Image: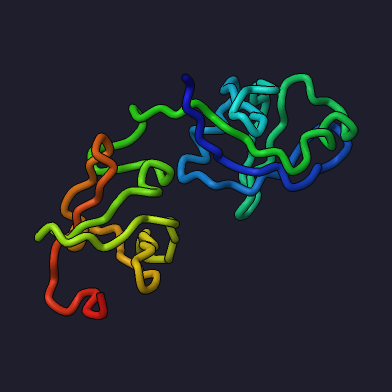
Length: 172
C-alpha cells in the first residue's frame, strides 16, 4: 500500500488561468513543487482520485502559488478548492534523526528509566523548535523535540524514549 503525506491545502484561486494558492504544511516546499513533480488528491479512503503535475510554482509569502498541467481556467481550478495536496512518502529525503510528523504521532513515550509518560497527540511548531504534545493520564505535556530531551525514536516499536531529567514533568 502506498503511503502519502499531505503537503498543503488549496485555499483559493489566483487569476483566471487556473493558478491556485496553497497553504503549505511541509518544510520541503521548494522541492515538493518543482516543475514536473506529481502530486495527488486523495479520497477519505486514502485512494488517489486525481493526479496532478506541477507546471509552475512561486512562493508568495507564507503561501505557494501553483499552476498544474491541464488546469487552465478559473473554473477548473475552483473544483480543487479545499482539497489537500499529497505526495508519496519518501524517507530518502530525510537526514539521520529527521522524521515525518505523522511518523511521530500516536507513539508511546517513555522515560529512559522505563516509566510510561503518555502518547504523542500533536506536533507543534514554535519559532525555535518542534514540540511533542503528549497526552498523559492527567493532562497534556509539551516536550521539545531536541537532542537534550529525545533519547530514541523507534518507529518499528512505535515508541519514543526521552531522557529522564530531574524536575522534568514533576507532576506526573
